[in-house]
Image (cartoon, rainbow, N blue to C red; front, side, top):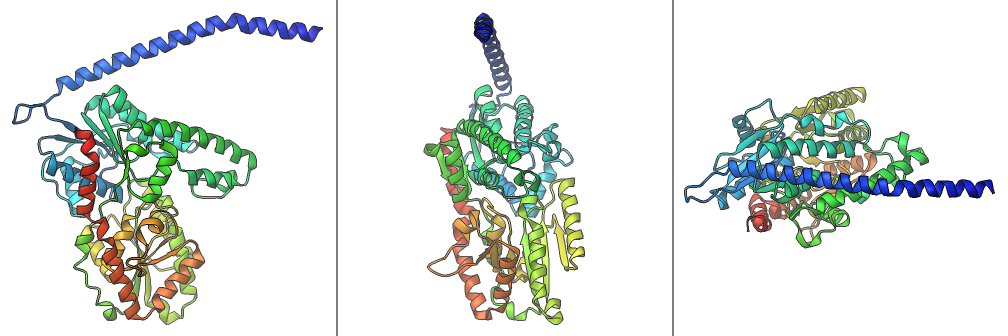
Length: 488
């Protein structure tokens, strides 16, 4: 009897709290709505006061790219500069803006860097908006719940960008999808995005679900069923939110078949999503002769890629070590591993030091080239026999294409863009090799080095011909065709 009375008392308490809770919820919703309307009006006023007139007396469109690390030397930055160059050719009267957090350099230095690293020179000026809060999107500030922390941090950084310059067209070119609703609903902008790599993917969910240890899923979690289940719940909730913010985009461009499939799974926006392969400077490498291999005294194995954890440079060093273990002392002297890449920050520089320590501990001769000029990159590729790539589920792989265009025999990871889009047969002929572990990489490198010169030459020729579909010209045509929607 006492239990029944207790339940009845609880029901009466809940009933008495229902109306106050309802009123409080409605009030909070109204206040939030009023606040958002006020912010929208304030931002619209800022935009109106900043309007510039072109030579024809018409208001100039402001086209803004959100790229906080635009001075880095990776494939994402090459996409940015090629996209700007393409738009400037077609829409000459627009004002072009780049939101960046590279405060330690000037706009002129950034543009000179684009010329030096990528051989890309813009036809018209670009306005750089230097952001103060880039640290909000750096992973070192979020040792736990990194995806959520960086995504919420991108909203803070996006708000700073929006308040400093309100564009007509906003393009996120670096993967900060949480900024899209901010610019669309508060800024009143047409919004588009170029997705290099989904913030979360179904592959990431499967890694946690299957208890696999990766760079983004430590063994502490993968070995603990409870922690794995909690992380899986967190990932599913994050994926749902990520899907909503991504679906706010008026236009979605992705860089590969792999990315396309994952974005469709999570964003559910197939009607305005298209594949636009990233621009690879194929033409620049075509003057490298494919006939000089017999003049080489040894063989160099070259890796191109930013020094980021997902690139898995330790795998390259360990695989090279396994290859050397199969060789005689004389054969080892004729082999070298060269790691070429860009460092974005102190964390990347520390990662290079750790890689140097690993190579020293394993007694593996490795040469490091950090943030080198394009001319040196080209020279190193012209001297290489094998181009090495080890990132699991690389979204595309511009470095892979550049290696193939330069005439190196590519050995890439058997996943993602290299597997689905790049290292695929060309007119029925082999264009490269794929591997996925220390042993398979070492075996593949040994196989390539043992091939007759005429066989290596044939693979190099077929690979070079196959990558013409990833040229700058193809990118510009496809990018302009896709973004035409934003300018209507």
